[in-house]
Length: 424
Image (cartoon, rainbow, N blue to C red; front, top):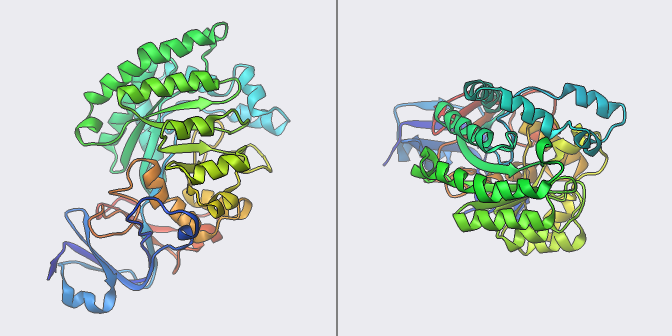
């Protein structure tokens, strides 16, 4: 007899997204591991049974049996690329883009990332935490149970550390699993425009060691949560050589590696990420055929962010269909931030990816669960409904998971459970 505290039964269609050997690739991504008429049992926050409902009453001893009334259930969604700690907004820039200004033009004029940096510098740590917690709850309402959060809007040693402390406080205060990423190399701040190399030296010589020291004393280190270093390898941001220096130093200190690459231009960032053993390589809008093949042959997850293209009014999207067909491990994420994608909704991202990148609903689901979990360094504990994993579960309003990508504009989520406890 399996002892459990709670059993969800009469699940019409359960999408397990089961993938015991790492992220799904190629044809595997079309398989959501569906079980009809299913039961999931939970004990001590972990999944202890996954299977058909018919024998479950004889196999499971649980005081609470929750009837799911034939609705679909999927794993808790994982948002593996976010800039969720920020202050202020960029609504004025949104209007400027409508009138024809490009993202890079706004950035060159002192807007973009730097305008948010001014707001973050002016905000207290407590203000950043409170605003981020509100966003976390909004994302939980939309099915997210785990997420990565980057720094990168401080761009001074003091303010980047303030962001890291804010991320830790958010992790303590929200039921969601939070993974921290240091992104001091997000943009060249205004005070270093005349000498960008000096800012790279600041990141390498002072920020990275200080960030690692913070991590080693943080709760993240104590509970084994990974700590990533990311860099924005792009024109008017960080060159390939500077990006390599930042990531090489970070890897030597002990960071796991991510890279923003090929968002607007192809500068060799994909190859750099692969060389560095990056857990994920993100954006990829200008990836070439050879880049896609290299990604398919690598251990890196390709994280696509179609909400950015949609928000910027672009008709060009990363080649998601070709990447999956080539055998890449593809994940999807919001990139939620005040400039290029002010959206908390992974279901909306699935809808966009299905329509503009020809990624099927099951592929979208795997991209937002098990593959996103691996991209955030959480694949062994999160992202799928398997015995032994965290009981992060999402019950849908509809009878099958395809509705996550098929419908858009509303909230398809009925309820959300984090380690078996209802949070939304």
